[in-house]
Length: 63
Image 1 (cartoon, rainbow, N blue to C red):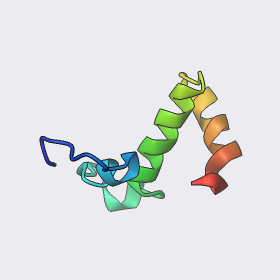
Image 2: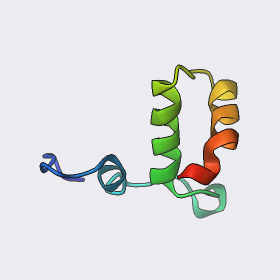
Image 3: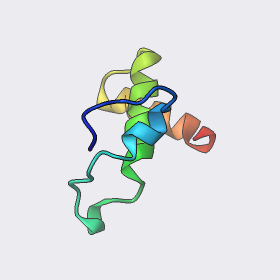
């Protein structure tokens, strides 16, 4: 992962540079998509894992 963020880099491009620590068997969805959904959920006031899961189910088609 780069230590600097270049101007013009969008959030999803930045998240794609984060190494995925999960095992292949445990990763249904790409890590950048999961992280983006968590960030969007947090920005929408969803913080608990149940609230985030409901948010992700409602908005999964938008990402």
